Image (tube, rainbow, N blue to C red; front, top):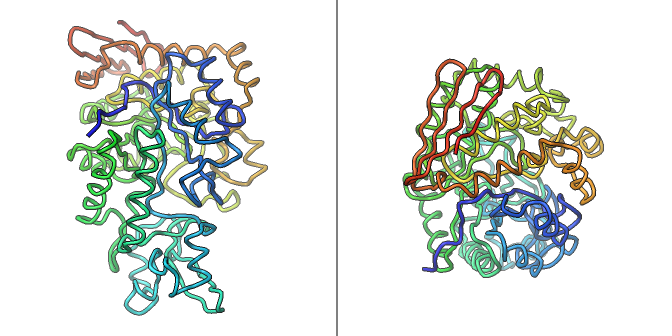
Length: 474
């Protein structure tokens, strides 16, 4: 097994065309503005895709020509470790695999590549009880009706949008596709592969079809074995109860901290840090922390880490204390019925308040693990009302397209953007944040103190959660 390529430095999350128009522009922006501030880059899906901003991939062996080429990706990998997305659960309806299935049906090489209802359910279609048992984000059976070339029709499993058809994990052809894709990513510059929608991948009739054990572990270990040879790590992406994340961490895998965003918001809204302290005390070092991602701010992830009343109060505060956070953006009118998250930039969730926002980032950077910073958050971006009104897609409120000129102007005109960058550089350069060190959290009334120690090195964050004043001692 080759040596792992991950560095304990902040990872940027960005689309290929969000900081400039393409991958070449992205590299220029990183080189010009973020030397020393960013060690890794999670380039959100940059493969040819038919929808969901890249998350309905048609293939993984080439880069979408609108973004550039694989050589452009490799150029970025020379100075940053990279995370790639593998949608292990599904592939595009426009892919060659599904097109071949549509044309040839049972004669297709991919006849069992997808989950056919007639083969999955005992009576071809699920009962009402079986549909109710499925863990799903939409109030209907997860299916898509295929119309074959011969005029016949049947349902196949479709967890998310109609462009994203689920793969059959019992299919040898599908498992071989997974293996080939992982190896291709490893050979093309990935340091870590994010397994998108991983918990949905295994399905069994009569179950929730979500994180089914022990089969999920079998799949996870199978994937790990494939990438180990290349010194590449995997990161399962799961939004659910924190105990699932910690169960994965106990087996030595990297995990996400998706609970931190709402816990930090609650602390900064209320001035209380007890819930945050309890969470930081139980958090492992082998994790990636987030405040924001390309999706909304997850609510489901803090279940049982806050009371239901505190969760409701925090969710309501996003709308009352946030800037341009409208409940209508989380409805069918904006193509969003996901009750598990709120669509908003993290900066706007804090009322576009520079002081509160910088403290939120300081808390994230002092928390156990490696911080991920979403590109909109890195530039303290406000809710993009113009874009969301144009697309009527709720998540686009947090997916602004920045030109190189706009980025430069942000650095010229806004102190908060430079302050965030300085904080990022501190987190990357100070040995106190070593992952083999410790994180000690204290709460006294409105005061929060987080101490990071590693060897002889120490860094201390002292903050007032009510006034949002803070100091850092190194």
